[in-house]
Amino acid sequence: MNKPVALSEVQLAEALSALNGWTLRRNELILEHETADFPAAIRLVNSVAVLAEEADHHPDIDIRWRSVTFALCTHSAGSRITELDTSMATKINSLISPEDGADVVTSKKRRVNERE
Image (cartoon, rainbow, N blue to C red; front, side, top):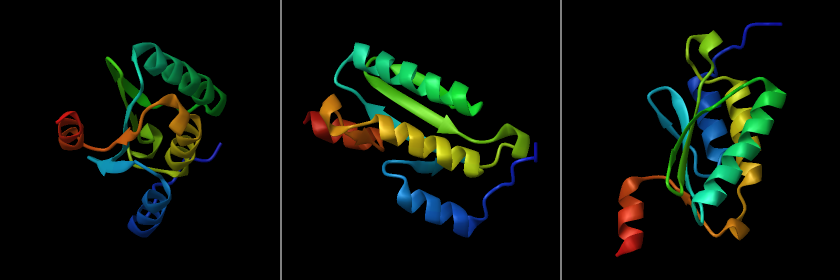
C-alpha cells in the first residue's frame, strides 16, 4: 500500500469548503457536533466506529454529554491531512442528518449564544 500524501494548502482549502461544519485546528480536521441527547451521541459514535473499521482509518473522538468532537489526521503522513481524512469526514457527515435534532456546532461561543 502506498504511503498517504498530505494535501496541499489549495487542496485542503477546497476540501474544507465542501465539508459542512468541519474546521482546521492544529493540522487536524475538526467537527464538533451536538446531538439531541447522550444516547444519540453514543449511536453516532458507534456508527462512525463501523465506518472507521471498514476504512481502516480512525478519528479521535471526544464525547461530552451530547456533544461529540471528531478529529482527523493521518499519522503515517506525519500527522498531516490526506484524502483518507477528507473521505472519512465526508462519511461522518453522511451520518449526521437534520432529523437527529441537532446542528453542527463549530465553536463553543456559538453554543453559549444558543443557550441565551
